[in-house]
Image (tube, rainbow, N blue to C red; front, side, top):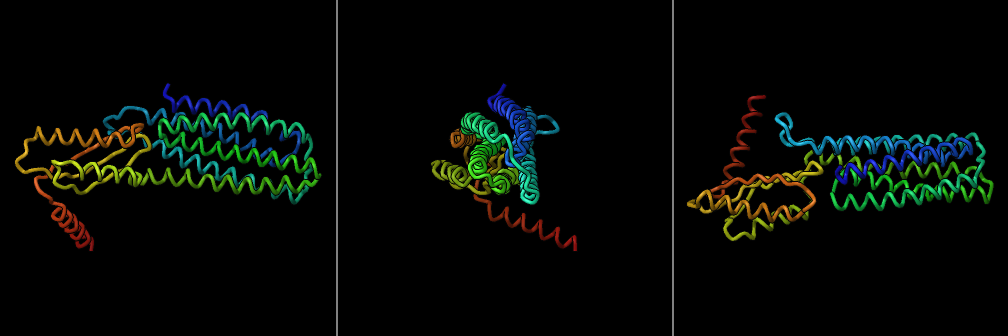
Length: 307
């Protein structure tokens, strides 16, 4: 089992344990903040199970129908995860408003505080583990999971503070108020997950520092006269790079292939925890302007035909 899949199994198992503990005490105590945390943990477990199957699909070898693999399944899972988190945040806000309007009393405060302390300790250990896997694999699904549980860690701490304040003051509105702001924070945290997943689905270029590194490798090679039409993207696991490099017109194909191997090897070191698919194109002279003119002419023709 890969580290990514193992991480999703661990996170879903932890989430299931927290669901049962929080939900039982939340229903008995009437705490909307604790109920919000229980619902969030339930969604965590479902999302982690979804992430397991997303990673399983993404790790499948390319096929005749999916020649670039299924890595973007992870980006789809990240968007779904972010959407689920957003919905849970909205529900928590709704429950907080309902409690504020109806002034439902909170009981079993000491057991509730004990549950939140247990949850904080377990979630902290899980976040440290997920961050270690995310840093080692640079996997978008694991990064999203780590971010999600990091958000849970803060929300659990806030819920504990709310319960302590209710216990000390007897003011029930504190529980509803804290629940409301936890819901807002959860929605805010989902935004980054959704955006990153959408950017991968839209084939956004690699990070600027990686693109700059690729440019530097091509520009510094003594046998490459110039380069153009550099294109990059990622599916969250594999980086895809295309470029044209200008070589001496009389260069042997064997030499050109050697140069391509050299630059590809250097590029792969920029992100060692990612797979790379690099497609170089050999040019005997710089034809960037000609190609752009042809491309523009093709587009112009299509527009005229459409008219």
